[in-house]
Length: 329
Image (cartoon, rainbow, N blue to C red; front, side, top):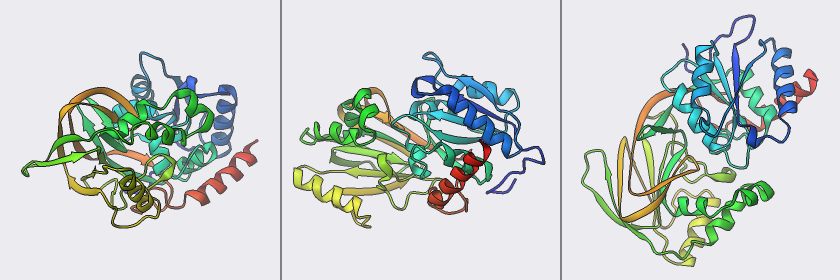
């Protein structure tokens, strides 16, 4: 199978939609738009699976695979995506993102924001790419894992505020913890000697964009077999301002940020720290152990699928998607 495409034949691809109903304000409208758009493109009607509190996506995605889906559309937030990845890793079934909710890091890295039409168009144009995934225990992540300030920010951001103002809600959560004391960490990468740092946060990233599409790690590539490690060490408000300004200006060198790379990373703190995977907070702990599983997931991406940046052509694909959805109505 080529790296950037799969053939669905004359009848299109068999697909399924795994949807988190809590994230939907109009589930009937979503179903109608998806079904009509796929039908107009010659695809069969998709099967639908709804997540539950007890099973946020893995079981539904696994059932979709068993029922013959070739593409699984994931419609939900970060937690839904992460759960579905657990079922899709290591299979030949592609995952397509239908952005939903206020936080979806993988959608941000695809340049899709909250655009349903763009998500459908990406899948229908059949750009495909095998990407790496990170592993942490029995969980998988596609974007990043973190320990320290980033997880504190997520904990401090309420669902109500996110629903009201969107991703800027995370800025409000971040402001509450800017002056917190740093953690003492030991960072071991592969078989190298441990590095000891006083850090505010350590991020282990497969791709480089944060909420709002802000690109933190310009050189992070999703299929190079490595994870990029960002160690952030600001101690004062001025440090934070300099760091944030450099990131927003997309400068190659960011003050108070050290970047490392490896396949296996163990971060150990002197005290228990908040932790997160792909924007979902997990129980606090003193250690974060992650590794990379190279090219383990087929992902529907904007074309050309071989570009290092997953978001290439995102604006154009959004325009094509809007025209397709309007034409299907």
